[in-house]
Image (cartoon, rainbow, N blue to C red; front, side, top):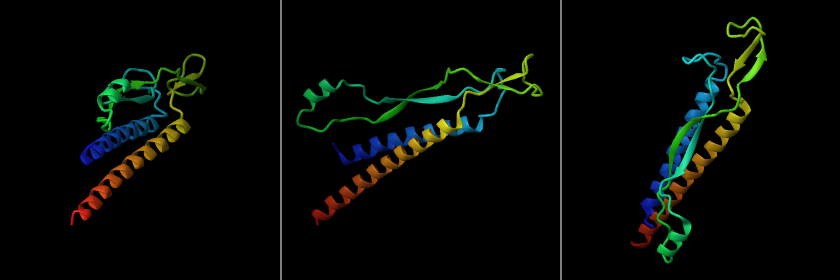
Length: 146
């Protein structure tokens, strides 16, 4: 595996996690939106990751038995909507309340979003550390050649 492959793989992870953080931020910003252009409350979105090169491990093991795995990183396969039901709160004076006084609220849970944000931040930082380590290893290899 070349040193730049390590950096490329970590860069794909950083890009994916940055997109995940953007979607989480969007969810938090819309946590109180009761009416979108479609007339429904905002529906929480989630990012689905996919391996860039979907090769079964057994094929890789036999193909690269004496070499390191030539992985390609991660990519975003889709941004999907969470299909959990909307929350219902009793607020008869709200403009979007139904005849019984209930308002449908977005299916966004701030606590879950914050936990997901921390997870995405940690994964981003781990990819940054991997890039930094790869760079340091390359620099040390260059020093040996002097």
